[in-house]
Length: 215
Image (cartoon, helix red, strand yellow):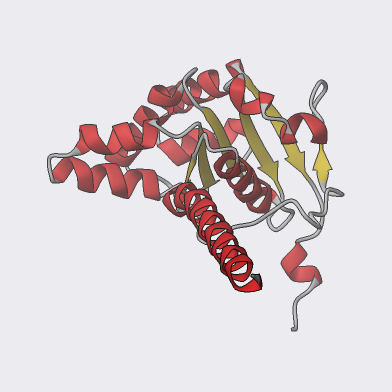
């Protein structure tokens, strides 16, 4: 009499393990498409370098309403103070909640659309980028853009306007974005779109990497 029960127990365990495996796979798919070089989470995150604007705090950032309202963020400040970590953790949250996210370094939105354009699939590339609820542009300002690249990056911002949440990390204040785009008017047009539904979160302090350096 105990053998059928044992078989049922093992079958139930197998089905539960199979369900958990499929759930994990479904959760991993959006994160895999996100393009994060090193996924991060907010567990243990050091918030001490963060200076919040009026009307925005930690709980607001972690709330699903942030993406539902298609709000934007500019994470601006000193190198190594947690900007990229915060942006990556937001990608993780967006993927966990299944609206999806895409993350790029500032040069990637140039290289990928340029390659797609050269291969005749720019519309498809733009469509794939546009399906994500959250778009992260990391390290804006570390490298200048040529004229063609600046136009492509501007198009990414223009397409995302009021359709996606955009998070930008940068060490440059707005007045210096013209040097990145090589055109003050184009930089002003990008800033105009970002600040309309966006907030500026500033980071100040010593670099985490410097504090924990072996040298």
